[in-house]
Amino acid sequence: MSKFSSFNFSGHKALVRVDFNVPLDADLNITDDTRMSATIPTIKKIIADGGSVILMSHFGRPKDGPTDKYSLKHLVKHLHELLNQAGSSSPSGYGGINVFFADDCLSEQAAITANLLKPGEVLLLENLRFYKEEEKGDVAFAEKLSKLGDVYVNDAFGTAHRAHASTAVIAQFFSAENRMFGLLMNSEVSSAEKVLHHSEKPFTAIIGGAKVSDKILIIENLLERATDIIIGGGMAYTFIKAKGGKIGNSLCENDRLDVALSILAKATEKGVSIHLPENSVCADKFAADANTQVTMSDAIPDGWMGLDIGPKAVGVFSEVIRNSKTILWNGPMGVFEMEKFQNGTKSIAMAVAEATTNGAFSLVGGGDSVAAVNQFNLADKVSYVSTGGGAMLEYFEGKVLPGIAAIKD
Image 1 (cartoon, helix red, strand yellow):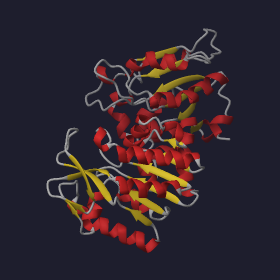
Image 2 (cartoon, helix red, strand yellow):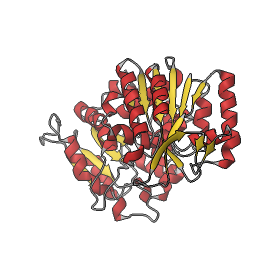
Image 3 (cartoon, rainbow, N blue to C red):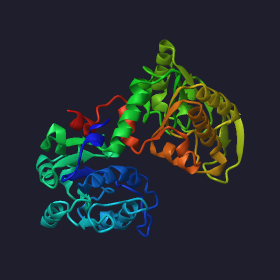
Image 4 (tube, one colour):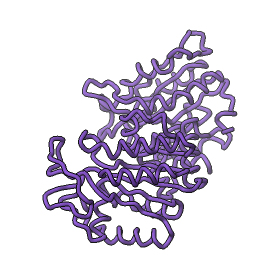
């Protein structure tokens, strides 16, 4: 059992770092509340114990202090609804969970409201990034925030790779007993560690996306652990060109051809099978209404570009995935946002879901991969969907994440 699960929050004021950096539309309505929903169990556990909760988060990238469109006040109503859905209970005596808002995370009002919180009540602080000290990892700023609670809970895996005041610096102001991961953070870290350090073989990593340069470190780290690495998306054409193939107008990082060859050589040396798409769905322009044809990936005609993996590649990749016991998926197989080029990504998602049903452990992470499993309604058919794109990527690159180290140390 985790420290959080066994901790009794009765009478405590828990200062909880969450990741409420959710997308809003032009009318300031939330378009995807995944990150908010994911941390609700942590908040409810504290409340059920008889504790109160002070939530802090960043939101967007405000450049010059307080900005209305980056205010967390736009999330208060939805947070209240999430916490008061059927089945919620509060010992506060109000028949529901009260959510208060402090329009400045360091104001006297914030301190007074936090101090007066009753068990079962929640206070959401204004955007931490309205202070430049947050991103600078300022110690004095972190210490002021720390005085709002007596227990620190980090439940924001999506920011664990940032050495910011509220994620990496603040923990030092709480004793080892009174600083811990929340339920979401625990799930994220344990799922990632299961894949990276306790994977059952065969272990297949599916790496997609546009650029080799974005994924070099993760591929090199996975060469030490995976049995198979599937490479799709635009980055595949850099590898194919490096091997002497003709890729037409497909995306290619010409300054990374040597890197691609080096990765292929290392894989051979370590006995890791790297799978490149044998054929591709090609287009005569980057557009939803483009003309298309299927060609071999190393023989794409001039003027054409590969925008998705082809049928042969789908078959080979799916077979590898179905035979796997551990699966990591980071990055799409093509431009799945356009219907003509979504079959590859959708097929891979279905293969991952099928392997999971048959007993494999599957972890999906990275914004586009998560968007894909959600779009194809397969999120509940994989073992774990990570909420932390950049953080998960850096974890699998083998880097120490400041937000995790701060708690563990």
